Image 1 (spheres, rainbow, N blue to C red):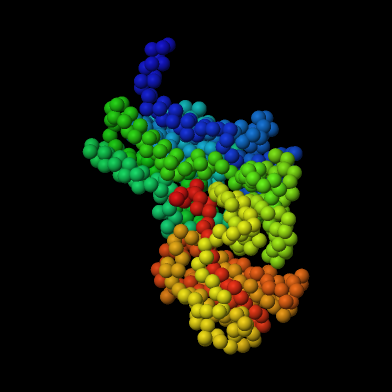
Image 2 (tube, rainbow, N blue to C red):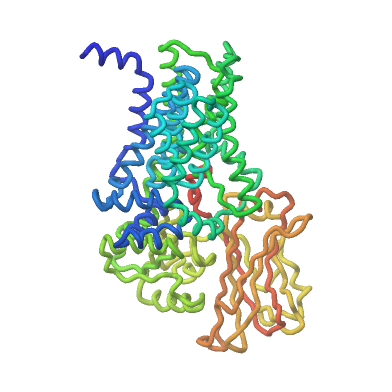
Length: 639
């Protein structure tokens, strides 16, 4: 027995090392891996008391097939709802997928390609992260690879045993019930099989196809209802740059991965396996990788956007034969060197370059509650800023951890005027304010807060959001420019052009003036690159308790406008204000990468008095701050 084990280890040392590394990367601090937004959404839809309610209210409106939701529903019922418990099956799906890739490509090509492919699958953030997420992505990859395993047995190895047909039918239906894109892969793979079936086997294959259809019949009514939803609604239409961005994401946004892949391709040309590479199998792999990508892209552009990195994971494994299919079989020693090289490079990039365990393991929803506990002051004002379903995710942890302190949701205030009045009153008693924010329902929320709590004491950034601690004291904002209307300032229009509208150090707008003097210049000359958000503050005094003018920021190019944003004064002026009172208006604009990367982009800031109303303006100040640099860090480069 010992000899058999020793022989097995010697023969499979490469894949065993790969699986060991894969286990370490996926199971690291297992109990600390948090639920993502989508996982919490899945969990919330398991609280129905009947299977009928689960389908009607938990599945049909989600646009995904019923498979995952039903699985989690019963799995939770048996094993509980702890995060690490729910994730275990998906972690195992990820590990078995690595084994399947190794087995399939060792059969199609050679052991070297199997090990190279398995090494990448074990260590890329793409597959590591989705193995740690209880959603239908890594499960779909497993089902697709298992389907290919049985497809290979039937059509490449010619093993026409009934068990292979049963396995093929079951895996195909699991693909159909798992995700619409894994279903698409099952259809593409099944159609491919028609080109391999001969007269002796075609009737068996057609019967298998009928079996797949028969098992899917209960889901047709759900599919019909979901098709009426016409897409996801929140996914943006992809551009041609999506292709570039996807491959950058696969390579973990590192030139080292590019060099590694080019090096492996170069090695394959030393003794290029021409006959093997230019075979039907490589062509099939190319089709299986490209076709779902192309269908998803065209559907998203011309019908309804739905293309994301996650839905391409089902076809991702078939990229490896296209890249490295010409590589010869090396000795076990060289194979081991290649395996260790790939594992070390990709794991290092995963940990230090992508900062996977720093970012992915810290949930903004948990941080809302946990970070407040670390505020030094005993009783800070607590504001939570989250909208739509994000609010439900935060509420889940507030309830789970039995939070008893008082807090307010930002969207509970009917307008900025009401929020400002609340902050003004609270600042008289409470010197510290704590804010948890996901997405900022109000773009100008931070400057509104800093009008009364100007010192930023602490800030922690997470994927999707941030937490802040503000206090009363000296302002910590970076001032770009200000206009007090008592002297000319750089990049502002000269005051003498508006001499008739200057009154005792204030700027008077009336029925004869639609636009105030403006601040303008080329964006790259005015605003340092390290800043992402520009805030504009000004004071106004109105003769009545209403005003519909706006503060406007525009970014224009010689080819036309690039960005236009405004904040209407009416959001800050209401019936509670005294006529002689100065009212502070706050406006914010985001300096996106698109804006930053546009040459000759010109920034302008001004007041637009569209209805020619009369009011005073004073103390215009433009400040700069940084956006959350890791907000989209799971899918974009991490600073």
